[in-house]
Image 1 (tube, helix red, strand yellow):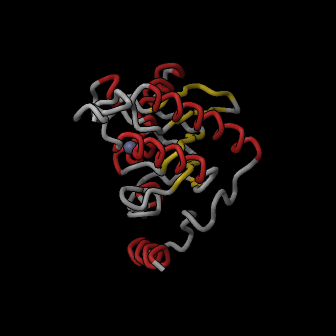
Image 2 (tube, helix red, strand yellow):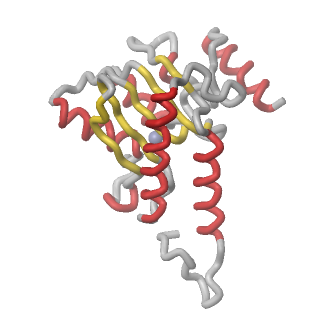
Length: 192
Ligand code: ZN
């Protein structure tokens, strides 16, 4: 019911009925998308091992993986270092252009900051894993990448391997909430 209300609200805001979020999991995805999303999940897992929220991303241009990364906010002490932003920056440097085209894969629905960056980078296509009902800006809360006022629109495939992404995130936060028997220090060694 909540999902239906959310979709109805987005349709009301944007007048667009094509909202491929949870419920149409992976609709429009190819076997190649599936294989690359598995690599994005590996990046997310690696990020968790570094104490980062487990979100991973890859940028692919003409079937070539140009950049891959996980969240780096703790590592870089940078509030903007979401996996998508890191990957866009690395891809732009590697390709030596700021208009990227191509496809961005990410394990969690991008937030408003990242969705805006995808528009600025003129990414052609976005494939994401789990929908983010609290902060997702590609159909869940708002739809920045297909907003009628934007000067660029992005093809979106949502919900690909969403369960694996959610499982990683839930496991990460559950572990982080577990108090250490000796006191306040986190049992995982993460910065809580
Ligand atoms: Zn973001």
